[in-house]
Length: 85
Image (cartoon, rainbow, N blue to C red; front, side, top):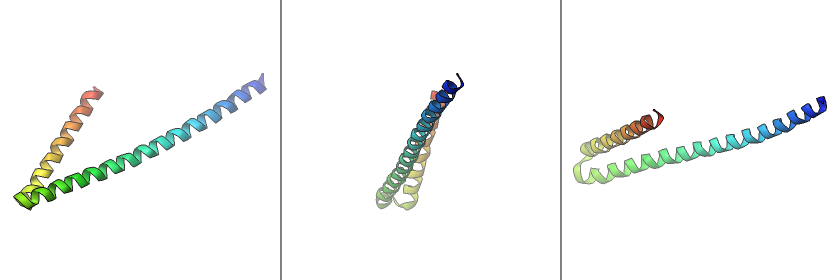
C-alpha cells in the first residue's frame, strides 16, 4: 500500500514538473512576443511621426501621433475592462 502511494506521488511529481516546464516555456514565448509587439508598435508610431513631420511640421506631427496613441490605449483599456466585468 505504501509503495503504491509512493509510486503515485513520484508519477504525479514527474507530471507536474513537465507541466511546469511547458508553462514556463509558454510564458517565455509570450513575453518575447509582447516584446516584439511593443517594438513594432513603437516603430509604427515613429514612422507615422516621420511621415507627418514632412507635411505638417514636427510639433503638430508629435501631437497627432501622441493623441492617437492615447486614444488607442484608452480604447484597449476600455475593452479590457468591459471583458473583465
